[in-house]
Image 1 (spheres, helix red, strand yellow):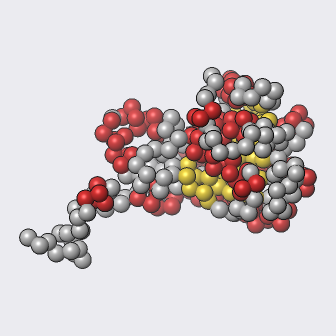
Image 2 (image 1 turned 90 degrees about the horizontal axis):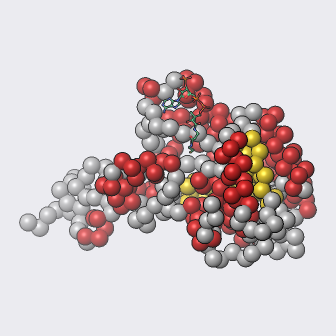
Length: 314
Ligand code: COA
């Protein structure tokens, strides 16, 4: 289905900045990743997306390709848990599209479960999809990224052939402070962050950059849809707890992606770019006290009635 450009890209990027470049994205038919790829393709690139579900992957690829006349987007059925399949997917991408210049390790699995109901296999499954899958993706694409950055140097100056040799890992912020029902995902994503750090350190000398994007609560994603169908009050409360007062848009993750892949992001390496409106910083902000986030900050009141708080004048 055609998606209006303003839904997946801000109007600040120059058309053609990814002309003839190729992006490889695992889990590329998903809500967030498909918009990251769509933005890249709209700005001149071609892409390969991988997924486990053949119909979803092929349909996703065709849909993304419709964003720009002449765009090539290939859907490849491959499970990120299978190293051989990932190597074959990367090779097919580079062969059929002529190069593999950028990568997004986006495939992930998630469900809500308390540890008491989390089997060893359930924990292992998410670790294998998120962590091992990200490692496999990096291993499969890095030889091509090295070739790309040899052609498109990371010199700090605007190169005539543009950028190349960059990878982004999609993570989460659950593990920054901790979140119940997410033991498996917290462990998996903490490890993903460190895989990115290792790539940044070990492949940075080639000119490659490796960064993490951590999406916050984003409208239209599975998790947020689940909350929306629960009840309107939870939605309102969830938005109120985010410093900017709203959920994010998929476009805001796509914009962060374009930034890191573009010349503007050339010196950004080994960071975790949290795109969440400041949400993770206010997790648990109320702490059961008499003041409520964010209402308290609009009230002008002092913290009263707690030890160490201002004494009431009454
Ligand atoms: N609560 C507890 N355990 C669960 C669960 C839940 N909601 N969902 C799955 N599991 C367990 C299964 O019971 C199984 O463990 P068991 O063998 O001890 O019974 C284990 O997880 C593996 O499940 P299975 O369905 O065989 O794995 P899969 O590879 O087909 O699916 C998942 C992977 C579990 C991550 C599945 O949720 C999935 O495919 N998700 C993809 C979509 C998604 O997560 N999108 C969000 C992206 S952020």
